[in-house]
Image 1: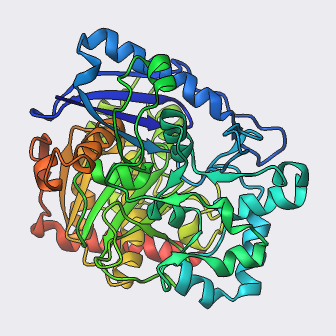
Image 2: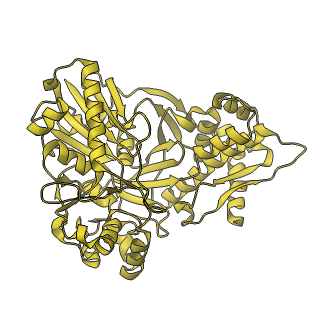
Image 3: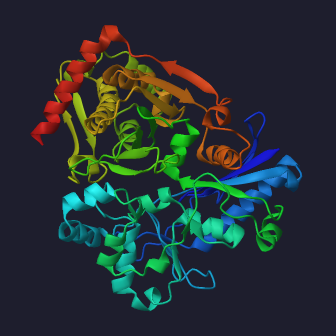
Length: 493
């Protein structure tokens, strides 16, 4: 018995086949092999053809089926993870009317800001838990004003994952989690955000039928089965945006648990057990995968742009030529906590929402030419990244979250002992490292939705924990002092 998971990213589409009994991935593939193209007709625009996601998905599916040599009838459920905040518009024949406006497209910012001010900031935050911002609803407002000929033909609007589910099943539906990430969900009324729909002048019929995150959301159609090599009637039983799904993949379901990634940019995603929001909108709040009207589970998302990109800049410009990341980590480990007075603010990759959309830039503070060398700079860079995580986690704590444990994949910055130990030391949280990815998580989510697993405890009982990092209480004061000095540097700008 097998489970199939898809992860629809902006760079590639990945498919994984998981043995439901062992929880192990037996085959995976991704397409394209080079980064998927993004259409950028104007500065700040980012679009992709929805049909290209389908073509990549077909290729990845065919690869894993041919490599695994299983019977297609043995795949019992399909799960979908997808790039968040995109907008796909289709007509009554389910044809895409234009390229999808994806997550990193910024054209809708003025529309969201205008709605935020005119509807009232407190009103928006208390109902949507966010500013309308640059999310899906604001992108639709842009189309309404700038492409009226497209808007008039719209039958339904969808997120990227909804579109893939439609191509698989022929049915159009969405989830509460998906609607919340697009700013279409009113948490006070526990319904579609009619006030925002009315403000923008959207037809309520645009919103697809709402299905549970876990449960049957359609079955593979005869047409899709023929294209993909799957069995017609295979149920689609789970879908979620990439960040909620990443948390699911890391077995993060309960209040106080945190999922974190630290690639080029960094994400801290925590689960809150009560409806709340940051009055300054420095973090975003969406319905988590296990949120229901009776059991509040909200995903609080902090994105930090300047993360691994600072470490890679250090590698190119500071480290000795040819020095590997592992060797950089070794060099950093030789330097005392606090980098002997150097503090680095890692915000050199654009404006930071955590800093109320300020573009603070990266700065190096406290260099002593007679004391410091590249090892100090490499460690200070890693500490600065960690301190930005700590700063965001404190915002989450201010929203009533009790952060106790951080789950992360064993990848990118989390490969560095200095990074891991500093994060544990400065936050006082236990860090658990796992071997997993989004498409495997989507497959296990499908197993939960199909009833193959009774709950997430059973679904992730086989999740391989690679390491546990406990806070070192003997160094608590040193970490606290280094963080306080970093915060003082941040205050100055």
